[in-house]
Length: 253
Image (cartoon, rainbow, N blue to C red; front, side):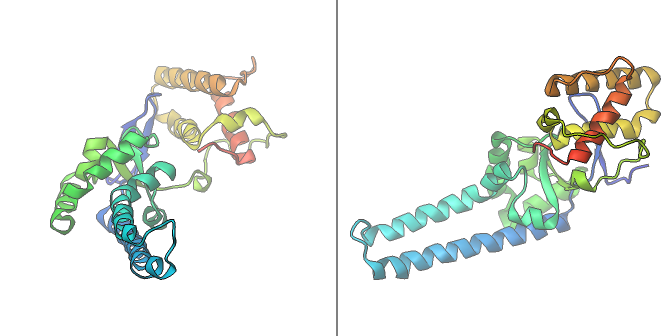
């Protein structure tokens, strides 16, 4: 049984995944850290514009421009800090990374630039009255979503690295020898999908279990170019792939 604060989502591959939404505490810890970093950046820009640039007196950079450039940079940091980091760092900012949380799409997939920009444009609304609007939205939402998350179709979850997940299926199986470069095309999300199925397959209806194994096996074979051996079932193939990926410890993010 999963705790009640977990959210069940259905992936495009029709695999059920359990995600733990981040609560107000961890989200505000991340926000506080990111706000401090933004404040430090503002301070550096103001000091440079007010004291350093006039003192240096660069011929190619008139001192009168310093104020305008400083305002522009502060504007970019205010509006672009969160979106830029979440796009480049796969749903994390420095604050989120320290707090151990991450933004993902409500399908469990990594966010795109569109989601990253969309959810953060709504930050100005969520931040009204010292983030009271955002807090109310998080409290009344089962998935702890603020307005920006609703607009972008995202959720903030506790980040659990794939390397920390301990599979409980067929642990006694022999290690696969040799590096297989084809497996480098698989992402962490692909491994999560495979292992989610392997963990939950005993709870599935026999036909659903069979069809899901076939779909996942075909997807992995298309991505990697590997072929399932004639003596292997689709589930055996998935176990072999997951074990090899973990042994190689090389995943595409």
